[in-house]
Structure formats: structure tokens, C-alpha cells
Length: 414
Image (cartoon, rainbow, N blue to C red; front, side, top):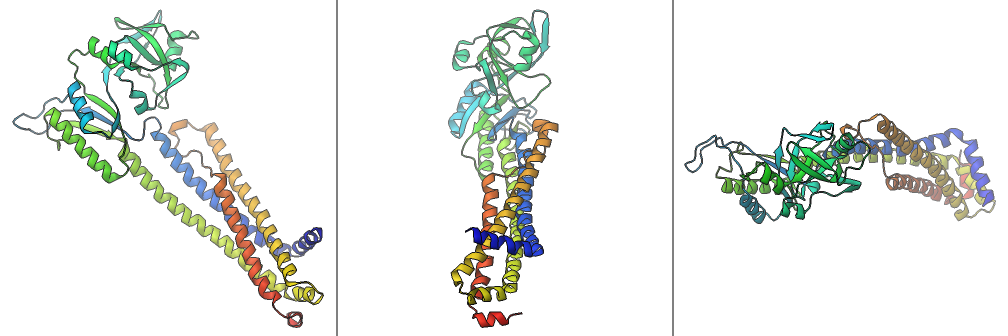
């Protein structure tokens, strides 16, 4: 084996230009493929991160004013929903898996002793964290639960930044906050990706209804929807949703001013479609670059074997078997493609990881349009192995043809 290694090293050293050209074709193909795929992933990750503050299958509704008459009722009527309307909506649309009405209370100052902040009080149900991707911090208590809703407890969940302002280094769990003239007990501290100057605080929906909104009219609804996996499915769902809302709210389902719908499903599916097209385009370019590298390796190996026809003839005349000659050429090809393919892979991964480090150190989190432009190791290794296999075949077929030539004819080759 050592003799074979010495022979290969001698052949490569004596043909530096040929070795360099072969290796460069391999390394460049791998490098460009990783760089292209990394760029596509970076752009895709950056845009998708803008959905991270909210579940990708979330739908929000806001009641507006009617803009057309309906069944004898005049236009310019305020639209709102009662609790029984909410029940009917959930019954007619089983694809809604999580749901909450939302009541907003403005104008109250939250105070603890001499410290105070101004936050929007948002009354929600226990499903809300699933819709808005809200996370309770480690050791930070809990979110609003069903018992809070049933018993209309005066409890509150606050943001970690609000807790820091009001309670400083003291634990906020179990402490009390005065909101206007109402005192709430803090039961949870949350964090979320959506950074607001003044984060919301959350109280049970039933509690806010009892204290602030005795008429129990809802003008904002939030939900998670399952089973809507295409734009066509989404169109059918949204149309059915408008028909149901129009039925319970006495307005035309074609009146878009009566209810405003923000549909994250549609936005996400449209964005996914765009990036799937970009990914396909990048893969086509990347595979084209890889093929160019394979063609380069094949051509150079073909020339290499042709140049060594006389040498192979001498080896055969001296008693070398065809299999030993083939093994020598194939091992040389594998060595070159594997070594330079590894260099190209390391260079590509190193560059994308370096860019990622720079972006993370100087970026602004969720607001970045280009994020984590890296490629998975399995893809990089697979591309390298494809080039190695191509190098093996590129060396094997011309070498097999050369060893089939009779030694006397090979010696005549110039």
C-alpha cells in the first residue's frame, strides 16, 4: 500500500498543473454549491423569522362597520360579536383548534409603590400563548388558565421588562399591581420575539368583561387553524368564515369593511411558494456548477490517462496486471477529488459560518432580512461524495480502455 501511495505522490508531483486544475474543478464546484445554497437559506430564514412572533397558521379578526345595507338593515352599523356568536363560529368550523376573543383596555397606569408604567391591558383566554408564540420565562409562574376564566380571578401576566421596571430585582410572582383602581395579583412573567416599547399585560377575559366591558361585546377574535395547507384551501376557509360571521353578525359576507381579516396562513403560503421557487432555482444553478466540476474532472482525467498510455504500456509489459493498473489510476483519482473536495467543502462551510457569526454579532434579531446563511453538513458531504464518485468513474473508464491496449501498441503511442 505504501508503494502505491509513493507512486501516486510522485505522479501528482510530476504533474503539478494537471493536479491543480483537477483539484480546482472539484473544490470550486463544492464551494459554489455550498455558497449558493447558504445564500438561499439565509434569505429564506430571514424572511421566515418575521413570522416567528406569531403562529404561521394564525388568523385575526377585527370588527368594523358595514358599508352596504343588508336584509333591510342600514349601512354604517358597528359590528360586534357576543359569546354565543363565538360558540357558533367554533361549532361550524372544526378546523379552528385554538381560539380567543380579545378585549383591550387603554388608559390605566400600572403602579407598584413609586414605580409605574403605562401598558395596554389585554384580556384573553388560555389559548392566547399558542396563537402569539408567548413563552413563560423559566421560573416565571404560569399563564392565565381555565380556573382564572371560570372564577373571574383578578390575576395578571406581565412581560419580563415590565417586571424589571416595577419590581427591580425583586421577584414579581405573587406580588400585586394596581391598574387604575383595580388590584391584580401577578401569576406569570412572559417573553416573546415581538419586541414592543410598551409590552402588553394579560388578564382573564371573564375578569375584564365583568369589570370593564359588562355588555360582553367582542370586536377582536384570534384563532389557530389546522388542515389549511394550500392557497385554495385557504380561500375556501376564509370564504366560509366570512359567511358564518355575516350570518351571526347580520351583515353581507361580501362586505369586507364589516370584518377585517389578517390571515397569516395566506401570507405564509405565498412566501413559502416564492422561496420554494428560489430554492429550486438555486439548486439548478448549484447542480449546474457541480456538473461543470464533474466535467472538468472527467476531461482532465481523460487527458491524464491518455498522456500516461505509454507509461501504462510499460507497466503492462513488465508484468503489471490490468487490475493493478486500474487500481492505481482509480486511487489517484479518488485521492485528488477527495482531498480537494474536502478543501472546497471546508472553505464553503467556513465562509457561510463566518458570515453567520458576523450577522449575529451585528444584527438586530428578528428584523434581519438575511439570517443563518448556512448549509447542513449532510448536503455538503453528499455533494463531495458525488464529485468523488465522478472522479472515480472519470479515471476508471479511460484507464480500462488504456489497459486493454496491447503493450507494443501502447509503447508506440506518442
